[in-house]
Length: 121
Image (cartoon, rainbow, N blue to C red; front, side):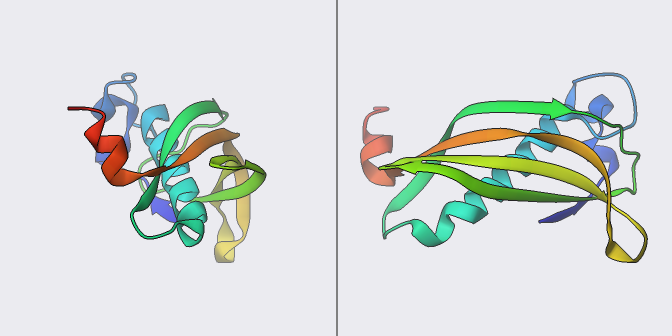
């Protein structure tokens, strides 16, 4: 998935710092979005996935206007549990992968959406 850093994505805007660069919470959201897209084809009708664990290193600053490509690769599956290696790279010249901005692992669990929500009542 590709994203362009906007003012709304900065650490200043999301409350995770005072600088106008990509904020870690937004990077995390983009990594989770990539894992949601990666698991989508495995879901049956009425199923969704929920994030349960995240390990993320934010390694480099990205200014407003920078483009980021986020990838998620399944590294483990057992029943309803899925783990994904995630990485975020700047998009370099001619669309080539640039410097590594972040990497980590996101764990998701496949759930029945209605049953999951019913437990909240």
